[in-house]
Structures are given as structure tokens and as C-alpha cells.
Picture 1 (cartoon, rainbow, N blue to C red):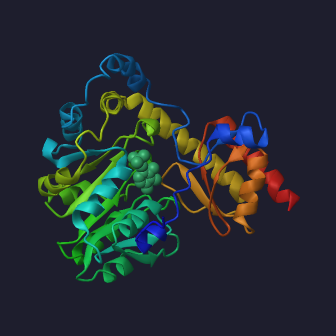
Picture 2 (cartoon, protein in one colour):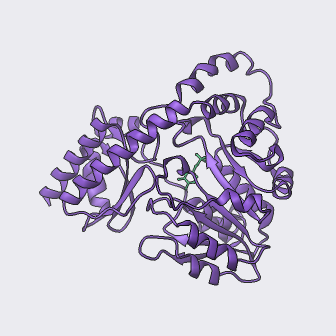
Length: 360
Ligand SMILES: *Cc1c(COP(=O)(O)O)cnc(C)c1O
């Protein structure tokens, strides 16, 4: 029986996650492979989060608190907003999907950058919306061009900041100019998955726009600096009106009980965050210097990864690195993205890359 599938769905390509370590070890028989492909925290989960998991385990026969009251209250206190301004997701990925399903009707447009987080385009296409894609300018979101791309059909505008996969940032004054131009009925989504890694003082206060009651949502996650990617928990900070609509579409138990409790503990684990940030900063500087000495030019990064042009087929370099037991991410063409790992992992990556590039 031939299936009837909408062409928008047929046009999608399944998301290709970073290769798991075990798969590489099994396929190529390479022991001690390292993964620097998914921007995970190499120091592991927050120890405080780990400590509460066994406590929750005994209550797994119960459904989670569908309202996630404790975690939403803690996030609200942390960010000085009210609990009705906090929405949780099974990863912030899920909130992107909720935003699209809630606010975008078929044929409506969503403005996004070219070279940005691939989930935006996937969700918009799956919802029969129209992704309006604006090229980056010098590796950054071209916010003036994105503002100009807004039409009466635009419902959402995605700003990934720092941007994945480039690591680049748009600054407060550029965002202020964007917010002065975008009509109020367009929801501006600031995806700040790497917020805790940002060092620049020019980073925009996106939450300030929420406080001013603009139609803005700020997405953050426990998957990156907090080291809880496997638990799947992220959140959005926005207006009570926007959470009100999102909650009509949100599956009631989308944030599982382990994730809720672990996130609550991780939020209070300032030490883990500080240690992760400090190591990332020091190691990113070292990896950058080494890449530059290999003749490469990584883009400036405010996140926990670097993006660079290898001057030849990125796929070939990616595959040669796999054979050295190092998993990075091939983005497109000559571009690779590498996550900053533990010092010894970074050293191994740099040695492998040097060997691969010298071999030619
Ligand atoms: C990692 C990442 C996320 C977070 O995804 P989760 O679903 O919370 O794990 C969101 N946006 C960007 C740009 C990311 O890189």
C-alpha cells in the first residue's frame, strides 16, 4: 500500500546526530575513541544533580508533576521573573517545536539564519510553514537583513545566540536595532543554549525584552554547561501570555521526574558551572592558538566549540579523524565544528588533525 505523505514531510532529511563513541569503536575497531561532536560538557553531569537521582528513582511509578512547580519556581527566582513566565521542555528542542505548532499556521513564515541550528527549519517545514533563510554576514546573523525579511506572514524570528554551529555572537546594540524594527506581533526567539559559556560583555540582555512585555522568548537548557543532555530538559522564559498558549499545546508530562529533580539540583550547582566555564575558556584559547598555528582561522566563539574551514573537503578530514578515533562534526563543504573537551581530549584532537592535514 503506497503511503500518503505530505511533500513537506517527504522533503525532510532525518537529523544526523553526532556519532556515538560505541558505534565508532564497534564499526572501525578503534578503542578509546573520543567525541567532540555534540557540544556536551566533558566534565560530566553536575555532581549535585547525580546525587538526587537515586532519591527520585524510587518514585518512578508515579507520573511527574505536570506543572513542574518546584523547578519553575526555582527558575523564576533565579531569573527574577514569575513562575507563569517559565515553560519547560523535553530539551529546549521540544519548545522550538511547541512554538512552531502553537504560533505558525501552514504557509506562515519564520525567519532564520543560514548556518544555524537545523531544528528551526525542520520544525517549520514539518508544520507546513515557510522557512525564510537569511545568509550569515561575516559568520554572524545578519540582523538588519533578517528584519527586512519580515513580511505580514512572519510569525517567528529565530536568533541563535551564540550561534550553533559558528559560535559567533550578536551584540546588545545589534539586537536593540532588530527589536526596534521587528513588528510586535512577530515572536522573536533567542535560543541561548550556550548562554552560561558567554564571556563577552556586549551580550544582549534578551530577558530584558521579556520583562518589557515584548513578544520574546529566551530558550536555555540543562543540556550544555549543566551536563544533563541525556535527561532532556530545557526551558523558555517569556510572557505569561505566550506560556499560556504554549501550555495548551504542551504534552502534560513532557518534563520527566528525573529531569525535573536533577535540573533543580544542577541549577544550584554554581561550582560545577564555574569549573566548566573556566576549563572551557582556557582550553578554547589553547585549541584556537594551535589551530591558528596550523594555518586555520576558527571564527570567534562565545560557546564551547570552534568552527573552522579546513581548506579541503571537510567530509574527508572528518572521516580521516574518525579513523584516528576522534569524532568531530562536519557541517558542510570545508567546514568542521569541534567541541572543546578535556585537556587530554583536545590534545589528541590537535595531534590527529595535524597528522591528517600533513598527510594531505
Ligand atoms: C544544544 C542546543 C540546544 C539544546 O537542545 P536540548 O534540546 O535542550 O538538548 C538548543 N539550541 C541550540 C542552538 C543548541 O545547540
